[in-house]
Image (tube, rainbow, N blue to C red; front, side, top):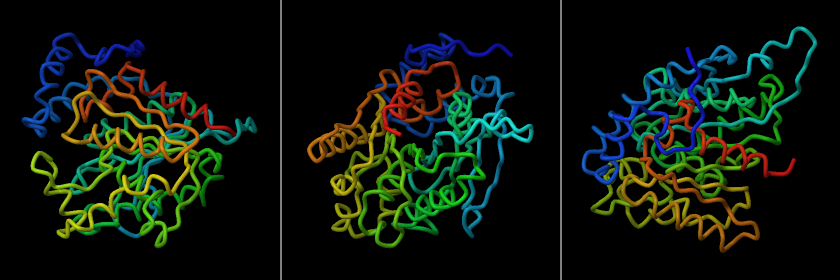
Length: 319
């Protein structure tokens, strides 16, 4: 199979007809998020399935806790995984990906391709990539998801040597609800008191829900209520947006041009709050042409702008 040619063009790895279709959907994204999300997955799945994976070794279903969803998959460059010949390449930087799903659904692999694609791409760049699953709101309402992320990070730190990663070079990438859990794990004082977080080198929030709200236009208002509870007076204190000043971890924020309603607004607010409280400003990127799903579905399809920006962010964090 021919390796997809790198491109920076928004949605540029897709065939022209599919690219036009997603650009047409873009301004209407919130009219039918479920159907539009499925269209995105249907478009990108063949591309990421066809991407070469020969140089990547995957260890699946590694248990980091006691629940059935307390599992993670480890993606390693083959040269790192096969080290019996005495040629030890040394520990690598690690990317830990936390998937989305509006708190009430989703898993680390939608269909055997989407979300795996994120980790395949980072592993193809020479990093160790780890794909984390967590409990959903029905069995683990607030702060359960953030607890699971904290537990997964603790497991990764404890097994850093076996995983061949540098424990001082672990970067977390959270998408949508996964970004909310990752941010809460690091910023929310309630979570920190109950689950002191393992140190990480940096945090990337992609289209993350950084504020709990049930505003009339929020397409995920019911899932937000399912996770954060019925008492709306608690929403501010349970929102990562309220706690930006509590951590100085290096931060990057990415939002799509066509987001689930309010997520771009919260990403910008998070950026400006971080900017106000820190000497070093965070990074903020808007992915033109992309929507809430394609912003992660495009990884390993040939379009590389966001991936290379994240690698640049990782490289900018001092060793």
